[in-house]
Length: 330
Image 1 (spheres, rainbow, N blue to C red):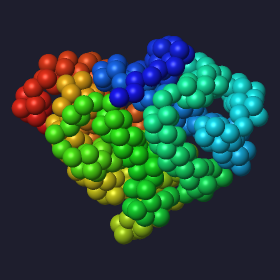
Image 2: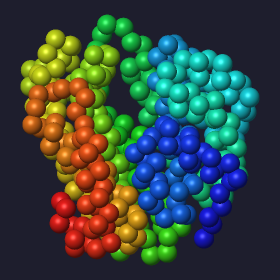
Image 3: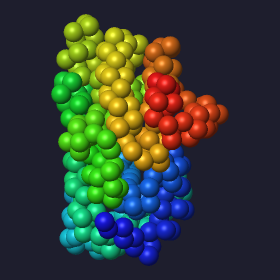
Image 4: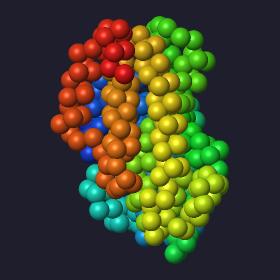
C-alpha cells in the first residue's frame, strides 16, 4: 500500500486548496489519509485547467492550444512554454486571488505530480485526460461566443459531458479507495465503479441545473435542444424567457435524483466512517438543492445556505459511523 506524499504537498493541500475550494477542502480533511494527497492534487490540477479554459478574455483558439500544452505537461512533456503562458497571460486576468495563486503555482502542482507514487500518478493523469477532454469539448461548442445561444443536441451529449468532468472523478476516487483502503467497501469494485460514475454525474447535473439562467445569459445551454423542441421551445427562445425550459429542466432534476439515489447506495456500501461522511455530505446538500430548484421558477443563485450546510454536516457526522442511522437521512 503506497502512501507517498511529496514535501510540497502539505502547503498545496492547506493554504492553496482551502483558497480555491472551501467545500472540497473540508471533504478532503474527512477522507482517510492515504486518499488525501492524490485526491487533493488531482483537484488542484483540474481546477487549474478549468481556470485556463474559462478565462474568457483569451481567444478560444488560444485557450485550446494552451490547454493542450498543459495536458502535455501533466503527462510529463515540455512545460516551460505553457507555464510562462499561465504566469504572464492567464494569472493577471484572474479576479479571485486564490485562482491567481493557483495559476502561479501550477509548476508546484506539476512537481508534486512527478513526485507522487507511480500508481497514483497514473490515476491522476488518467482522470485529467477525461476532465480536459470535457473542457476542450466545451470550448469547441461554446467558445466562439457571439449573440447566438448554443445548446447541446441530445441527452447523450449531456451525459457524456457529465461523465467526462465528474463521473470520471467518481471512478478516480473509487480506484484510489480500493488501492489505499483495506476492505474499502462491502460491494465489489466493479459495482462501486458503476455507482461512482452516477455519483459524479449527479453532482455535475445539479451544478448545470442550478446555473441554467447564468449559462443561458452567457450563450450556452446544456439542456438538449432536441428535448426543448419536443416542448415547442427553440433554444433561442430561452434568451427571452428562460422559464420555457421548465419541463426539460424538471425532467433532468428527476434524472439527478435517480443518480443521487445510486450515490447513496455507494455511500452506505463504504466501510470507512470517514468515507461515508465525505460522500454523504454532498449528496444530502444535493438533494436539498434539487428541492429548492423544484419549489421556484428558474432563478440564478439557488443554493443551500451556510447555516443549513453546517446543520447537515453536524447531523451527518453524528450518524456516519452507524449505517442504519445514516440510511435514515434519505
